[in-house]
Image 1 (spheres, rainbow, N blue to C red):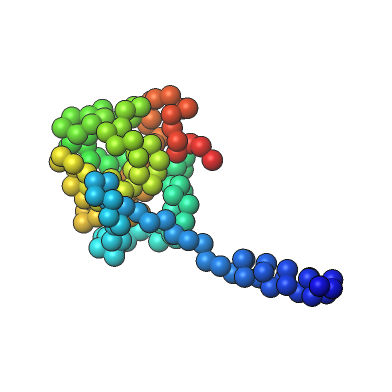
Image 2: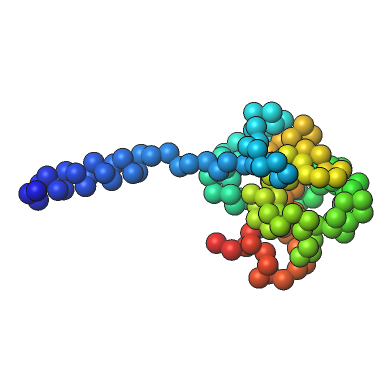
Amino acid sequence: MNRKKLLAVAAVILTLISSTAVAEITFRNTITGAPLDMSVAKSGGNEAVFKQFKETGKNPYNGDKEAVQKGHDLYLPACSGCHGHEAEGKLGPGLADDYWTYPSATKDQGLFEILFGGANGMMGPQYVNLSTDEMLLIMSWIRDIYKGDPKKAKWLKK
């Protein structure tokens, strides 16, 4: 193959690669493993942020002080009845330490799956009560109050 043809083929391949849409993550039910139906989620919030989360599995709000405060404000009425006002645990487990009932919650994707689709016990699905954006905001607050070993905080890893 001559040089011009080789360059033309390379250009076509690069064009195809760059125009390919970024694949979205498949979110799964924590208990059954079945795909979660995002179409049933309560509407509202920043769709662009949720789209970014669906592509990366990393919460774009982590470390954003304004988002963390909004997350705390949402957490109090939505979660504190079971998990305590400071996520210390009550009927539900504490959320600020190293112990996770579901180890998948050490990653943002896993924590979102638990919030959205629920889990065993009293943790029901929150997609009726909270938009996907509100869930990400609450998650940012939970990550912000973490008191455990940073080496165990998988959401902090790049």
